[in-house]
Amino acid sequence: MRRRSLLVAGPALAVMRPVPALPAMKLEFPRDHGAHPAFRTEWWYITGHGRSGGREFGYQVTFFRSRVDATHGMSSRFAARQLVFAHAALTDVQGRKLWHDQRIAREGFEVAMAAQGDTRVRLRDWSLERKADVYRARLAAGEFTLDLQFTPTQPVLLQGEQGLSRKGPQPENASYYYSWPQLAVRGSAALHGQRFDLTGKAWLDHEWSDEYLHADAVGWDWIGMNLDDGSALTAFRLRRQDGTALWDGGSFRSPQSGLYTFSRGEVVFSPQRRWTSPLSQATYPVEWIVRTPADFYTVKALIDNQELDSRASTGGVYWEGLSDLIDSNGKHVGRGYLEMTGYAQRLRM
Image (cartoon, rainbow, N blue to C red; front, side):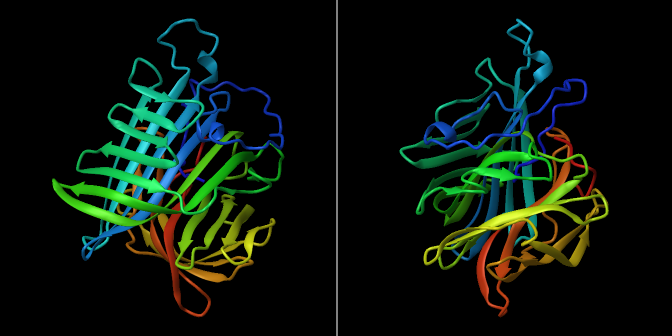
């Protein structure tokens, strides 16, 4: 979901227009790996983890595209018709610290772009590109760098109804959404100039929409988990102001039994332990029990402070971090990312 997740064009740039329900559509690849500029909101979101000797890291790479409706009637080359944002983060598990950075620019002038036809997104010296089924992310952030390659080991996973994923009680609260779990990762991260060669697993989400959030939704809780046996778990809920679930969904795909898409009401998030951010004063559940048709799982953050302040780009503060997955028998069965939005302030997209 996004992930990535806090796309917003400021109120001065937004215009009201009717938003119809998204129709069912057969996703076609590689076309739908690329950008969809007619839609208001889009993101490419990669999370993963890797080891370098005895050191372990988590990372997040997210590129967002936002259509600015108010400028599309302008003829000026300088009109900001599309905005491109990017977030990057590196979690040093042993050092118990999160490092993060962000970028924003209007599309064009060889500064920022989101290409159609296949994945090719760039924002200055940050990029994500797909060639011959292999993704490569290269980012030089303020205190860290990432240069990672992601190779699929399984087919694309279409979320929802063949890629059309409902996100609320109204038909227009929906997105086109697919995931690529169990990506094999090779590459490097550098922290304060020290290089670490990484191998591990990652998860990719690509999502685009015109009207993602219902008016009653203040944020969401989401997990994308690669299980050790090759399975993939997605679970999410959209949350009201009082903390109750407005909508929920997800999927479970296993090598043995294939894909099962969760129906509304089959996913329940129950907070177990909370942590309060000294930066935002927001309180986040950093341990959950997540009930799904596949199992009752415990989700535990590896470190509590994985909050990201993106107010210099997408305008929000959210929590997104590397987390363990434990099954109902108490066995560690996987690892992935937990994302929580709308705790510091209401999420607006």
